[in-house]
Length: 90
Image (tube, rainbow, N blue to C red; front, top):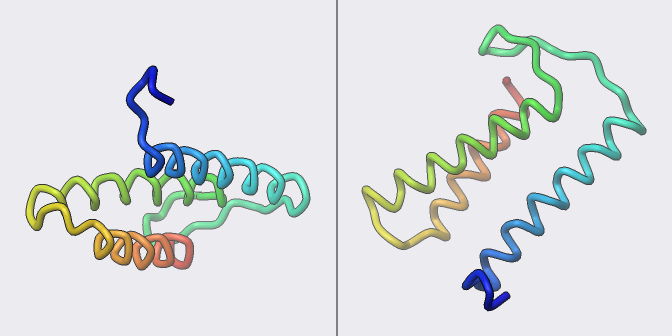
C-alpha cells in the first residue's frame, strides 16, 4: 500500500464499500424488489438508497470536518442515523 500512501483506515473504508456493493448485488439477485416511492417522490431501489446514503454521508463528514474538526467517531454516529432514515423513508 506504500505506492499510494494508503493507510489502513482508508483501505478498510474501501473494503467496506466493496463489501456493501457485493452484498447488495447478492440481495438483488436473491430477493428482487420493485421500486418504491418515498418522501423524495422518486422511485428508489435498495441500490439507489445505498448511493444516496453514501453520498449524503460523504457530505456529512466533510461538513463535520469543516465545522467541528477531526472528532470523526461522532460523525459516524450521525451517518448511521442518516443511513437508517434513508433506508426507512426514501
